[in-house]
Amino acid sequence: MPELNAPTRADGGAFVSIQRAPFSMSFCHGYQRALARRVDQLSEHLTLDRRRLIAWAIAHNMLSAWWSVEDHGSGWEAAVAVAQMLSDLERGAR
Image 1 (cartoon, one colour):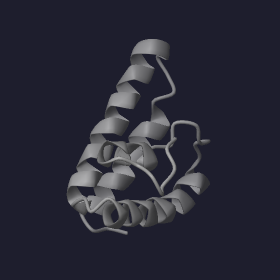
Image 2 (cartoon, rainbow, N blue to C red):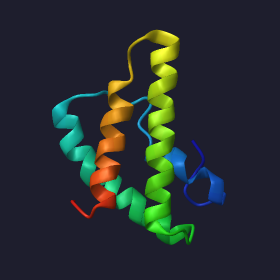
Image 3 (tube, one colour):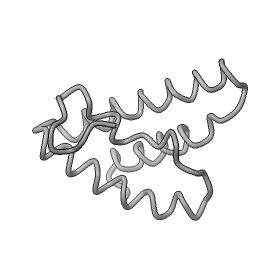
């Protein structure tokens, strides 16, 4: 994953993905707050529109979920959970 101090504009979605993170409901509660902070930091640092960054990250996570289904038939749950959290952020529900 690229470092926050030197990303390109195209790297933003990589920071709002949890591909290697464990999945559990307790994890989701803490991760939602961290995800909101991460989105805010990226939006400010990269001077990207927050809603556009969130929309891209949702698409990235759903694509990741689909690849997991295609490749393994499982393992898609975390990516879909993050997409839902991002959707909640986009609607302003923190």
